[in-house]
Image 1: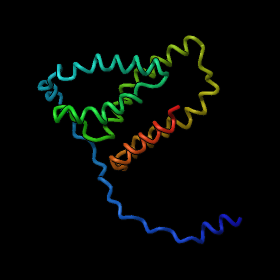
Image 2: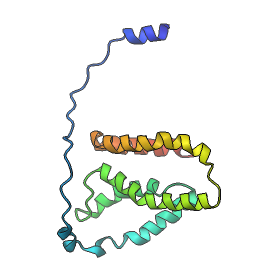
Image 3: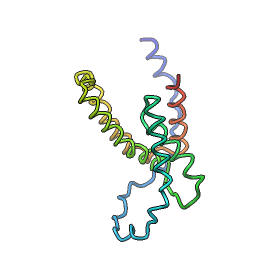
Image 4: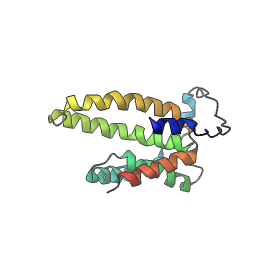
Length: 159
């Protein structure tokens, strides 16, 4: 194959020096730290979450598509009192919140018989391992890379 021969004869670019953060286990959970947490600090999120859920359901998309930008773009503007340690934490938090919406929708649609389980199985075989790979690999991607990838996916899927 001429294309393969040409592709293999091209010089390969030299790899850039890449410094990866060490994969350290998280610090142990200290239940006594919850006593100092001001539970009213995030009370504004209940109406915001309800609005996001309403808008997402009205548009037929997952709430994580809206929670992601809120956690990535709005929370840093609120100041250091609302910390998310990284964009990976923001995306992970958005997906964790949306897990409840996904589960609710799944139960409802299964109960109505609207899920073609045979068609869903191949997607599950790919998406579940991909989710684990993404979760483990997200710490290797720079913060700007997550923001660019998220923006590109949102623009690519917009009508």
